[in-house]
Image (cartoon, rainbow, N blue to C red; front, top):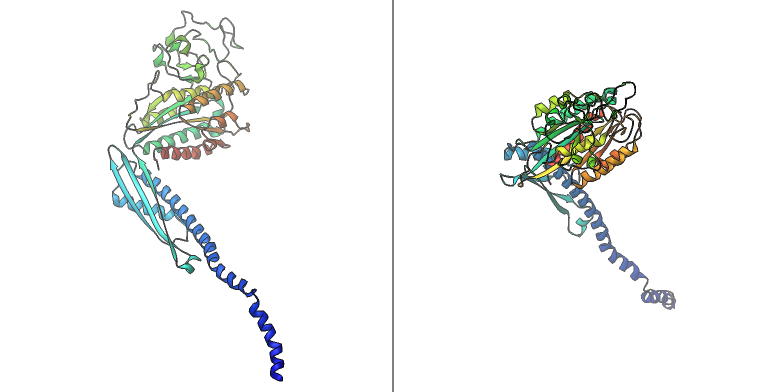
Length: 447
């Protein structure tokens, strides 16, 4: 009787349990969780590995560039290159997921292909999840190549020498910064001609140099020994309080009295580098009282370049376009400067640095020398379009110690937002030139 009672109480629930499929969900979930956890874990581990590899590649890139820069002269031994490469990489690579990286440096050099170094790194990362499915580590590797010796650099500097540069220590800072940049770029040259630099000091005019007076490139049609076209002199009239009359093209205006200064060429040649072959394309002589230091064409005479920097004196109004177009002109293998010929076996990188401490106030046609001129800005914008179309890199610097608005045209002219520098103190000129110098040096190194 008792057995029957117990059976009647136990067997029905047991039959229901056996017929029930609810327990299968737990079993299925347990089975599915194994690969699910594996997939999630793999994503986490691969993400860590990818971050570590990206960090490794960035460190290899930087280390390769540094080694290339150190061996610009091509005189380091293979052992020295390996030592340098390891030291740079170790300092740069800080990812802790890969505790040990094996680094190899392969160096090659030839007269026809230049020098190159290949840095290769490899290491392993310990997995957190994938080890459960049999992958305790992941191997990662990367490499970077830096080449040098086949790229030559030509840099033109258009430097503001206007009157306001005498304030706040700007002129002395510019001279120091320019001298430092000459030293920096010249140090990256392996042989003469690897790096050329030209200097174009500008105010409202530029100084072409008196040596060109008989070149046939000068327009003397408005020439006067007793006044300046751009400073307000006009033929047959007097200028403000000077009470002198400009004598245009008269026989008494001996060209031997010319101080070397020229004003903007006839439009639209003022924004081009068309060779001076006709009267319309000649360079108009102007006896400016604000005549700056003479332009120095492309040169690797570092001593002469630095001597020219030391003679720069602030005076005159701001005409950025004339400084910029003459900087561009110095890079051309045409008259009047006839830049050195380019060897087809090499790649040439060309750049212009334009520094100014103010806004455009005058050119041959517009402005009064003190009030900002949108018309001069418009001419400059056209000029910058032409320069960038010619594949010349432009760096622009506004030394804004007087609270001027940001120069829209300098921003526009820069070859990218990173090439425009807005400075508020004179001392920043020195560090900015150093930054640009590093960028220019890297133009000679291709990854």
